[in-house]
Each structure stands twice: as C-alpha cells, then as structure tokens.
Length: 218
Ligand code: DC
Image (cartoon, rainbow, N blue to C red; front, side):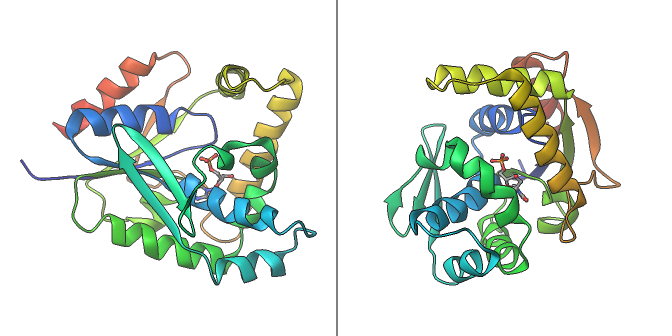
C-alpha cells in the first residue's frame, strides 16, 4: 500500500498529538510533532538566562541542532544532542513559544527540516501550517479543533497529571491568547487549508478521532 503523507493542523489542545501518535502507531508511520521543534528553540533561548528578545531567538536558531526521533510510539526531542523531551513542555517554554514561532528565520529553518523528514512518505505531521505551507501536497489534510472549554479541560488534566498546579481560568485565557497569536501572525498563520477537512473533536473520544483518521487513510 502507498505510504501516505498526512497533515494535521489545528489550535493548541485540540488533541492533535495524542491522536496523531496513535494513528501513526497503528499505520506503522512516523509521527512528526512540529510544535516540539518550535518548543526546542524556545527551550534553548531560555537556557541563555537573558531577556528574551527577537534578536536573541534569531541568534539561537542560527546555530541549533533540533532532532526528532519517534520510537516505541513516543517522540524524543534533542537539542544539540541533549534529550529535552520533558523540558520543552514546561509553562515557561509555553509562555514564549508563540513569540519564537512568529519569527521568519525560525520558521525557515524548521520548515526545511520538516519537509526533509517527510520525503519518504509514511508520515503523520502535526502543527499549525502543515497543510497550508509545509506539505501543501499532502495526501490527507485534516484540521482538528475543539471548543476552548474542552481544550482547556484537556490541558488542565495533562498538566495536573504532571504535577503542575494549574488555574482553569488562567488556562482558558492562555489558550485564547495563544490562538490569537498563532492565527494573527504575519507568517504562516494558523488557518484551515481550503482543501482540509474539519473535524471538531469536542464531543469525540480519542479512539473515535483516531478511527476517523485511519478511515481516511484506508
Ligand atoms: O502544538 P504546540 O503547543 O506544541 O505548539 C507550540 C507552538 O508552536 C504554538 O504556539 C504554535 C507554534 N507552532 C507553529 O507556529 N507552527 C507549527 N507547525 C507548529 C507549532
């Protein structure tokens, strides 16, 4: 069977990475979490212990190695050879990642890496601009979304499970702010591609969304 290229876009907390990983595992495909790559650049920026400016971020991205590895159904992220898979998920990284992702030099470098990772097919890539910009010729294009309340609840459960003390109202505000920043930025904003199919996951279980993806691939 032909090895497909599947592009999944959507806002933060829509459940993209959870369902994309499960679908990839079921199909024997590679899963590529492009958000993790933007987080990797944000993480390295924070390591400098300096004021976070656009200049600093651009300087960091000019000399960074970001490698994604998908093994055993999990994504590992390496920055300059160091495994930062856990450290890129902190609230501090989340707090600056939209600023990082809005910068052209950052996007140019990461998009090139992302395209190279998809050349063999057999990949599910998720992000914000995959169908519109990174892989416009993808075989399957999906746009996953859910209500802000539902997305906040999912992030809440995720952060709680990791031991973070989280405030629901703050979480909703943060998600709305990140939606706005990601949708209104000048370069490759978050938009549904004209030829992408919209799936609202608000009232769907994880299994139902995975099944919906697999149905489109078969
Ligand atoms: O999916 P995530 O929360 O890990 O993404 C982190 C940030 O990176 C998010 O604010 C949007 C940005 N991003 C992007 O601009 N383009 C992508 N293809 C993936 C993520």
